[in-house]
Image (cartoon, rainbow, N blue to C red):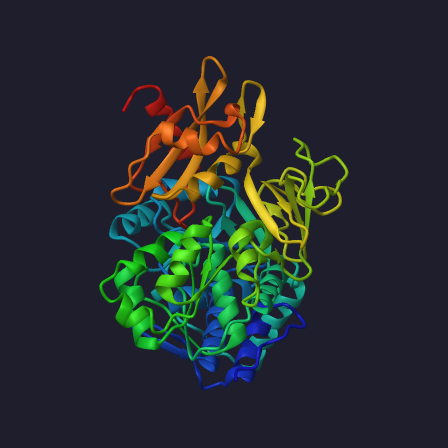
Length: 522
């Protein structure tokens, strides 16, 4: 049985030190095709790189250091080392182009860019645009670590503290320009600890992370597995072939991922051989998972499926069911708030200056969150501009309610409300019954401009193979459950929906396409 880590200082260095002491200094912590590091080697490598960053590259407290690269052991080491050196680690998506990354830096001063493994085109763009502040990770060697070096790093750590800005993660930008979220060591570890308490899954000798580290889901899994112990395997790539290989070879029985990949894995020719015998728990991250899809996946995988709610601004998780949660609640809700996470349902307003008003159970409103894991704000904005009110609650922009048992349900986004004939319509109200229709794999409802109503409702569907659904079919189903004002005026079919880097629905791209179709352009 692995002993779980408990925190006192909420520092990354404490996590590494306690992982070494608790799980065994010589046990393998991280494993990839190219490299393996024990828990002791991981801690020592981090200290050595941190010392090099301070002494040779001039990193000082609060300097921003960007990390760009695919998931790797080096990526993990440099993340810990940057923060250990007192810097702020700015995590970049290696799937972007150089100009997109440059746009992220408009509101921040970057002292150093650490480039890991990236595509050749991006490497050329980065090397050209950031000459002078860019350094390949492989060019930075760890310094020798003596007692003086340890004191230096500890002094830097004390001067910064666990509550200082330590990590910047960019929001996915599904509704606006991406913003850099300011997260602390304490907030990240505190949230991961509470998620670990809630999703207390059976222990495993090998863990695997199939989410990118520039995404909050990938980071949360990294903390989770260092807290729990065992060996964390890093796949060579995040593809179904590689996922199947890792799960089969290492008997991985827990997987956090996006719904799309859960479904894709069931189609793999080695599913029955490599995945189904090993998998015990699937946890959905980054996108909504319909109840029918959950039932189908549980039957196909012969495993438990949990669907929770998390946001980058709260360091990861907000609410999740436990492995012991009833089937009814798992299918109908996103579970209860994590321990010590305060979720408040408040009337929808356009300002964060109003006092918080709690709505009763079953009444819909905006979801507000307050916790020790909450971000400091967005880079370049104060707390109010970032959506944090005077009472410390973050206005998420999500619309939902808490049921009589305190379980969370989400029905839509405040910014995505469709205003038809002067009435506010939440897309989630229409999406839920659409997703229950036979032959429908997924459904998203958006508003498109309309001369008569101001906005008209467009239902965007992905169908099962061979399914035949028309606007009349949809109308017949929906008119039994809602007013005619909420019935879609358009029905569009897709093979797949556009998605952002972390797997989240690219709502703006979908709305733009629906608007184009509604205008008769295809």
